[in-house]
Length: 235
Image 1 (cartoon, rainbow, N blue to C red):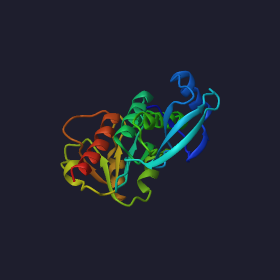
Image 2: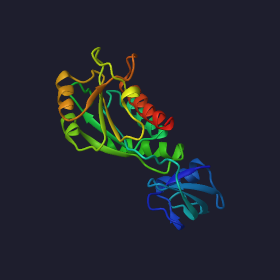
Image 3: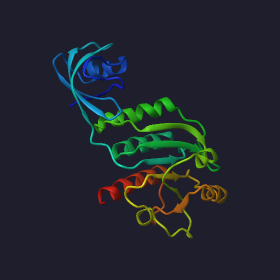
Image 4: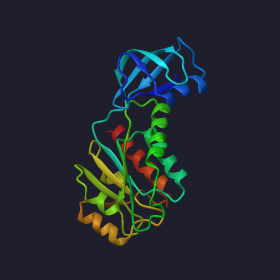
């Protein structure tokens, strides 16, 4: 079933945005009377019927709403440095949304090769992944900030910084306990500097390893996200 994103959706008659209407009519070739699914990105999935197939303003009749299955009793927040090749971070955002995540913070650090991102484009990629994976909740994507700013923000839970260093023996699999809120920082292609790791530790972050393999930035982020979800599912 085709899924559409409509933040203000509720039971009754609703209008799709022009962008979503265009997809509905011109891409999916849907017609009046077809059944569709709507996500409001805030925890609800809704059944609806297309009552007016207009590429500028489709009209839906939302018949019922239910709570989505993508809820968990902890917060999963990843901080990640955007890659030089923006397509790699776009792929990361798509995959962690599919796996399941609550919040993503983009940051620039000492070795970052990318200091600017198009936040609106990245949000569209997340929305598309929410629809593709039939999620009821839209992950929060924070504006790009500095590493120093991010590590000083309040967070109620475990805080980790993934660092490639032979002295780091603790792993996420061993140290994290299921059910805990968690914030994990993933560095840029050149990794974190020693000064940044020291600053993170002073602000309550624990350096951890994601395993023996040397991972790309976006791969490390996906591994961290999937590890947390799997550890909680095995609880």
